[in-house]
Amino acid sequence: MIVKLPFFFPFTPVKRIMETSRLIHKPFTINDLDDLVQLRSDPDVVRYLGGEIAMTRDWNKTRLEFYIGCYQQGIGQHMMYWRETGQLIGWSGLQPLEGGAEIEVSYGLIKNFWNRGIGFETAHMWMKFGFEEQNLERIVAVADGDNTASWRIMEKLGMKFEKKEEHYSMDCVVYGITREEWESNK
Ligand SMILES: CC(C)(COP(=O)(O)OP(=O)(O)OC[C@H]1O[C@@H](n2cnc3c(N)ncnc32)[C@H](O)[C@@H]1OP(=O)(O)O)[C@@H](O)C(=O)NCCC(=O)NCCS
Image (cartoon, rainbow, N blue to C red; front, side, top):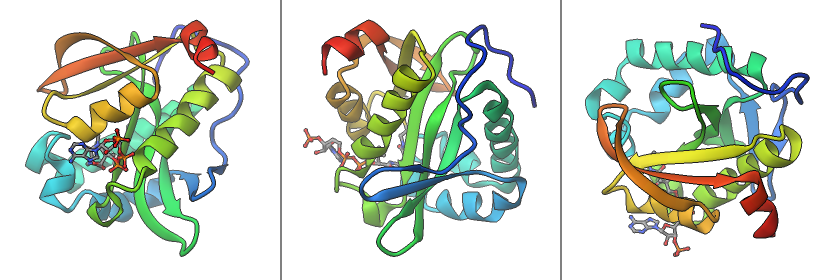
């Protein structure tokens, strides 16, 4: 699927390895469906991603094709590895929010790696990439209102609560930040 976005050209390619102190991020390929399904095989991980449907092969195949389509636009989800061991522990990246008018940052980890600041670490890397390499004007994030860990990450990134709105068939909180705000928070 080709995602049409109304912004920036030329852009920095995102189809490359991205690193933080503890994490290595690699772009998805079409051969990564098994790994993606495995990452989303835990009901607790998919609770706020749409529930059981997000555990299915079909749903993840569609998502994988979408992620790969995003790379042409200089954004996209990556697979996330724990640097120390090389273990695949999650996914994260920038992508068009459903509807296509905004760019969102999103992330997910297997349960053993929750609560170690990894969600914030990966999201921060993508915000920096989005604003400082891709010159995005604005980045948003959405989460089910009960997904406290997720909206806490948004707050720690300096994003501000904007509204409640339905996304991905969930009642979500919507947070956002502009490049100007990002720069002034540094
Ligand atoms: C959301 C998710 C990525 C958070 O990642 P994480 O690495 O555990 O988060 P962090 O360790 O960076 O914590 C971020 C903040 O949330 C808080 N937090 C973490 N888990 C929490 C919980 N269950 N309840 C309340 N707060 C929580 C942390 O204390 C931290 O805030 P603090 O610095 O003020 O203490 C992780 O829970 C996850 O992968 N969930 C499943 C997939 C998902 O829901 N993705 C988001 C879709 S919108």
